[in-house]
Image (tube, rainbow, N blue to C red; front, side, top):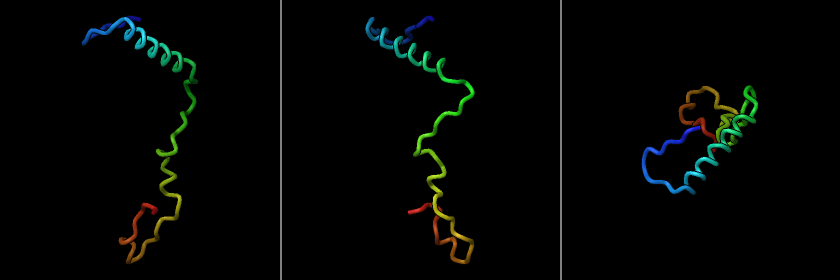
Length: 69
């Protein structure tokens, strides 16, 4: 693995820290199964938005909102 500093003048300690992070990420990627689905965070789960029933079509349906309050 070759690291090239494009900008700045990092200290040897900063380079060692960056290399440690890169190696840890590479080890984590290698240890993870390649075909397994990743877990979604709860805030990004679309099902939490539509937990209630949607309003039914009616003449006044435009006054109701999709987002539960």
